[in-house]
Image (cartoon, rainbow, N blue to C red; front, side, top):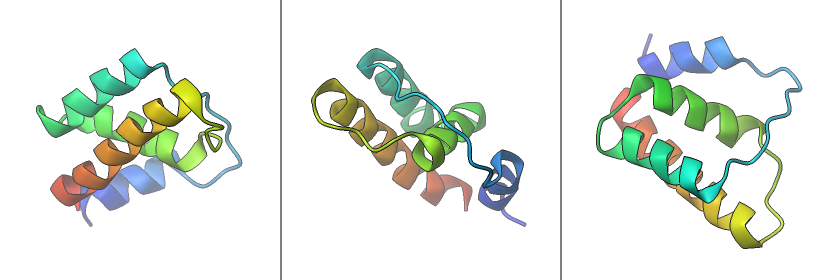
Length: 79
């Protein structure tokens, strides 16, 4: 089983709610995943990607674009 699959099972599919992170937090997570290939940061990004609400523009949208980039690139590392 891939690390991606293990993380996916660990975070589950329950009806969770998580808040959209600030831009600063999203940048930090993005950097941790893309540069350092951090498994812990990828798990946080994956959770945000799966459970955060749809952004309604502004800073939320910028933050979630960074999260989506980290998720899609991180998925390539960990699948």
